Amino acid sequence: MAWIKVINENEAKGKLKKLYDRLMGPDKSQVANILKVHSLNPDVLEAHLNLYRRVMFGQSGLSRAQREMIAVVVSSVNSCHY
Image 1: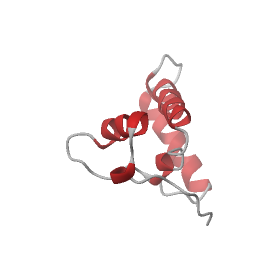
Image 2: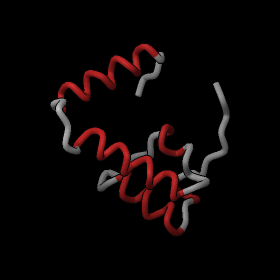
Image 3: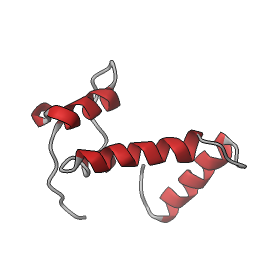
Image 4: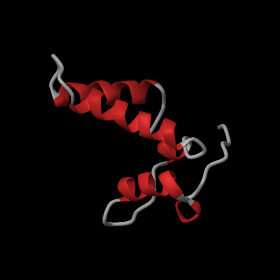
């Protein structure tokens, strides 16, 4: 497993804090590590979120369920719990 320096929720400032606040929502849970790896570059985190939104919710010949199934299969093949 790689160890990547990240900025935790309680240390975030500026744009990163705004993005974390959006990700945590009203329940104030933790930000997923898969997103936190971008914390040293908030612009990349924002681009990741925008890409995810377009892939999962944008116009497509695939249904939302099909997109979710593909994500589950890819995660399983990669032994990734996300």
